[in-house]
Length: 146
Image (tube, rainbow, N blue to C red; front, side, top):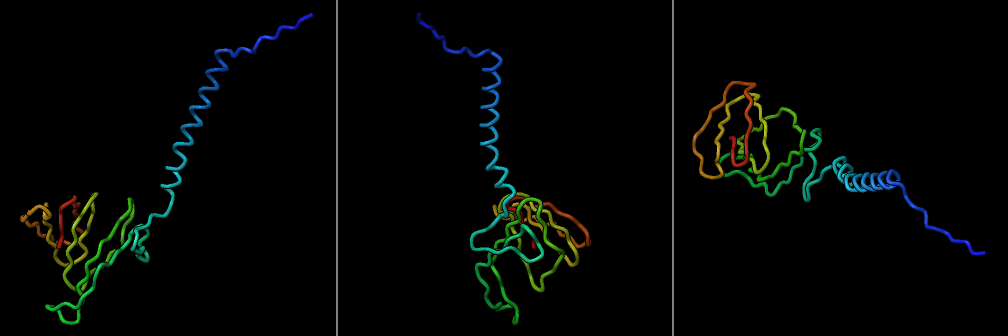
């Protein structure tokens, strides 16, 4: 007597469920590292996070004594603001020049006077003067504020 066996056949439903599970697994495998990366603490090579300002990193390139303002130091630095980060209200004892390299930067005048130059990177020269405390400005790449 001979026994004939036939290979099992998969129903359409089983095939679709299996394909759906594989697709879902592939999607989860693809997005899981992204989710983990977004939750990681951002860093800036050569920089350090500013105390009391999570997500704001400073890289100081140089600090030299000011020839025009004895007793003060002129610094060249880059600040990186990661999304949704902010820095506490503060002031600077001397002149400050801030330029935006990429992204958008919101800035609020606390006291004194500030001058905004749109397109300063490409030669813009029109100056908007701000002197009312609480005035907000949004700076775009290439804009500067003094």
